[in-house]
Each structure stands twice: as structure tokens, then as C-alpha cells.
Image (cartoon, rainbow, N blue to C red; front, side, top):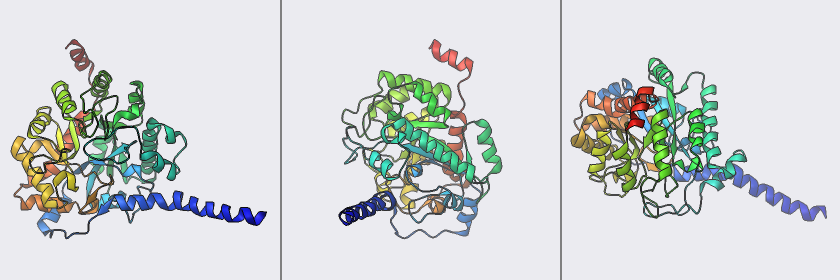
Length: 398
């Protein structure tokens, strides 16, 4: 009798080890790839300029995966050692809570979820298995643990004081700032008060939607692709009040138009491309670029194929140049989408590739400083400050 039960139990144990121990790492390695194609030659002048920059990346999904942010990894696109090697001053880490099965850029419903099996396979706390809100709160806790264990190498940015501490502390290879964002406010679970819970956990930026329509707004990749819902208008208003930057990435065209028409603070498109350079429905039209610029916002250019129709640093520079030529240098930055199920040319330790590509495109040193981080720093410092009583009164009066 014991022998009959021993074989199935052993097989079950092996299957469990494979599912919980091997599958998450294998999945991440297969989804977050570096394509291995040739990099461009970096000049001493580009290297010197790069080391003098304050670099900001407006979007990565690293917190979704089961690995220690502080340890050097042989998979994915970033970790603290690679961020330091790339001279990153501030990384915005997004919380991904749900994606549809068969995810595509054209039409998805919210009826299925790819993230739940990943959450279970990664042995996250049980409360995250069925709650999107708890998944984001877990990501915030994960970042807090990394900050606590980094011995000054990682600094959480959530207010003016921490922002200023970062700028005072950062040097090449040193302290990296970390700010929390959200990819789709389906994690509010229909309750406005949950926005305040997320704010209390440190989230200071949020995209209203991800790959499907939710109860806040329509997605560019959803079924209906509508605009802001009444609940979404409440959410956006509250975000502006408390100091949480509104991100239009993944929003439907109607959603983008309604946000730009009503925004009272600068908005961001954290990661994506531009239609004029890469005609993919994921990317912004020239009118949308102008609208973001009118708010004083920033457009983060991504590094993957669907954002720039290539993965080369020169393609990134070409998209950046289009935004500069259309609306000016002050409204464009970097939005890698590292570790977001993307294939790229280089990981975060090789960001000097972009500096070199921009130099080759004829950008001045001042323009490169603005693109690589100056514009994003301006947006973030202003955007995370709550509205003053006078601003709130003016907003209510209008």
C-alpha cells in the first residue's frame, strides 16, 4: 500500500517543484529578452556625457517577477546592479495586476487573467490570489523590502523631500531612486477610497487602463474603446488632488482626448511610441503629442518593436527626434517597458547606447540631458505635490 502511494506522491512533488520553482523563472526569461543584435559603438565623449546625466526611466514591470531586485540576475532587463551600471537616477516601477489571455493590441475583454496563475506559481501571499488591490499593495511591500535591504543603494521617492534627497545623493554607480506606478486602475476594485490606500503605500503615478476596458476608462486594446466613465472622472479628479500623475498609456483615443481636455496638471504617456515613426495603434498621433505637451507633460519613448518598429537605439532616437521637432525638447523622455514581456536590444546597464544614438542624431548636450531625465524629473517633482487649498478651491469653483 505504501508503495502505491509513494510513486504518485513523488511525481506530485516533482510537478510542484517544476511549477513553483522553475516555471516562473522560465516564463520570465522567455518573455523578457535581449535580442543579441549588434550594439552601436560608444565614443569616449558619449560615455563621459552619459556619466554626467540624471537618467529617468518612466516605466518598467520588474516588480511583477519573482526575483530580488537587489541581486544581479541572468534574466530580464533590470535589477539594482544593472540600474547602477546604466547610471539611472530614478526608475519608475509599475504594478501589473491583470492581463487578458491571448493579449493583443486590437481587442481584448477582461474575462480572463494571465496574472493569477503567475501569482500562484510565484507563491505570493494568498490574499493576492483573488484581489487586484492586494497585488499592488504586495508590489509596494516588495519595493519597501528592497529599499530597506539596499543599504542606501535604493531610495523610495514619494514626496518633495525624498525627491530632493535623491538628487543630493545620486552619483554614477550610487543611489537609485524608485517610484511606484500602476498599470491599469482595475486594482481599485470599483472603490474610490482604494486610491487613497494605494497612495498611502507610495504610488505616485497611474495609468487608468491596461489591455482591456475597465470601470475607469476605455482601453486602446479593449472591446468598446470608450472614454472616461463617471467613476473614472472621479478617480482622475482625486489623483490630481492628492498628487498622483495621470498616465495615458494604453488609453483609447477617446479616453486620451477626454483626459487632455480636462487635465489641470501635466499628464504623462509613460511608455510607447509615435505614429509618425511607427504606425502601430499602440502609439500616439501628432495631435495627441501636442495635447500632452499643452498640459506640460512628457512622452516616454519605449525600446521594443511595437513602440519604435525596431529595437535599435537609433530607432529610439528617431522617435525622440520626431517629438522634439513637433512640440519641442521639453516634452519627451524615456519609457523602456523593461521586464514587461518585451524584447529589446539592450538592458538597463547599456543605456549609454541611447546617449550615443542621440549624439549621432545631432542632439546637443543640453537636449540630451532633457531627454534622458531632466524632463521627467520636472514632471515628477511637480506632479507628486498635492494640490494646495487655493488650487482645490479654484478647481471646485470651476
